[in-house]
Amino acid sequence: DSSRCSRRRALFSSTMTLSSFANYVSPVNPTVYPTLAVVLLMFGLFFMAWFFVYEVTSNKYTKMLHKELVVALVASVFLGFGILFLMLWVGIYV
Image 1 (cartoon, rainbow, N blue to C red):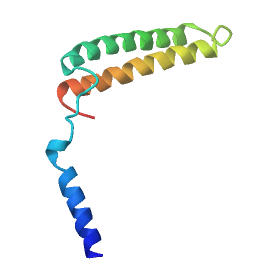
Image 2: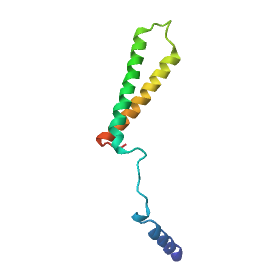
Image 3: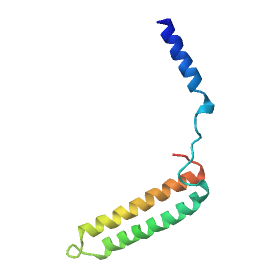
Image 4: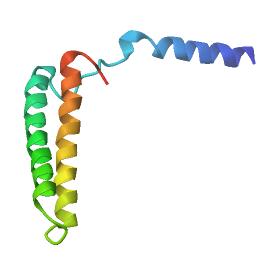
């Protein structure tokens, strides 16, 4: 039992040092966070405005559910990623 614990302790002490871990590298370069945030938010606001104008100007006979869903989905994806990169830009790492 004691030899088992000593082997386990030796194994962890030799392999679990800080120098053995690789540094984390972000898949997106932090210098492009501002550009991504602004561009994605602009596209998201464009599709959001398009959705609102479509909802206000169409009546119940001319509305198409699939068009509403697609425009709303595209707007929410662009706005979601835009807000994500905006938070990363200002230092809120999520």
